[in-house]
Length: 371
Image (tube, rainbow, N blue to C red; front, side, top):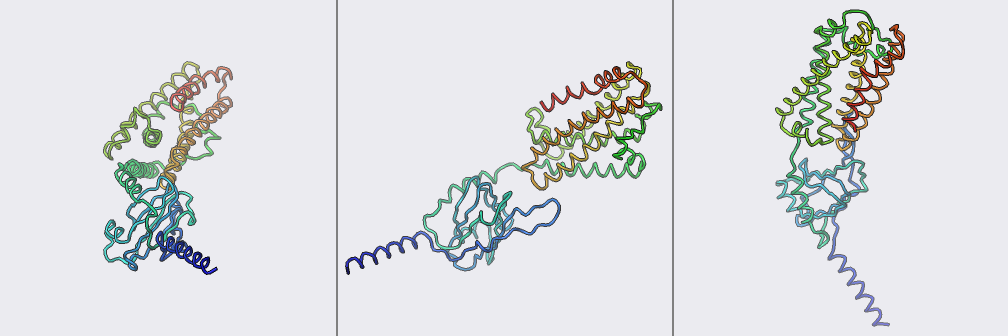
C-alpha cells in the first residue's frame, strides 16, 4: 500500500513538471480582445485590438494564435500575414528590438481579417518552451513586406476628383442642360425627339463638353477593369506610376472621344439610308443618358468597394459590367418603342434600322469584351 502511494505521488510530480516545462501562463488577454471602433460609411469593424503589457516580466513571451488570412500590426506597423492558421511566440525583448519600442510600457496589437471574431484570436503572456517554431512565420514576413505597392487607386481617386470638378464647372455654366441630361424621367418621356438640326446640336459646346466628361469617366472605368482582370496586353497601362497612369487615361479618353464622334456620324448615316429624317441626335442622346446614369452607378460601387472591401472588387466589377450589358439592351428596346410612337415609319424597317445601327454593333463589341 505504501509503495503504491509513493508511485502515485511520483506520477503526479512528473505530470506537473511536464506541464510547467511546456508553458506557464502569466496573463490571458482573451477577455480584453475587442473590435476597433471605426466610424464612417466606408469602414467596417473587422479589426480586433488589445493593449499588451510589455513592462512586467521582461523575460517572458507572448503566444499568439491567429486564423488563416489574418494580418497583424504592432502600433500601426505591419508585422506579418498568416497564410494559414498560425500559433507563434515572441519574447518581449525581441518585440521591443524589432519595433523600436524603447521604454514604452504598453503596445497595441491589431488583427485584421474579413469576418473575424474575438474567439478566432488567442493571446497569452508567459513562459513557453518549444511550443512553436517562429522561423516559418519569419520567412513569410520577409516575402510579405517586399511586395510592390500599387498606386493605381491613388490615381483613381485623384482622377475622380478631377471629374467631379469638371462636373461642378459644367453645372455652373450649363445648369439647366445638366439637369435635363441626368433627369431619370427623360428616359421615359424622350422630349428631345424633334426635327431640329441634329448636327449643329451635337457639335455645340455644351454637348461636346458633356461628351468629354463621359469619356473621362468611361476611360477611368476601363482602366479599373484592366487592372482587376489583368489583361496581359494592356497591363503596362496600369502598371506604371502616377504620371504614366494619367497619360494613358488621357490617351484613352481621346480615343473614346473619337469613337463617340464616329458613332454619331454612323447613326446619322443610317438615318439617311433608312430615310428617318433628322432623328440621329434623338437616338444618340437617349442612349447617352442611359450610359451616363450607368457609369455613375458603376463608379460609385467601385469607390465603395475600393475603400472598404478591395478583395471583392473584381467580382463586383464583373457584376456591374453584366448589369451594364442588360441595361443597355433594355435601353435599346425602349428606344425602339419611343421611335415607333414618334416616327411614322414601317415597324419592320424601324426594327432593321435599330438592329443595324445599334443592336448588332453592341452585341459584337460585348462579345469581344465580355466573351
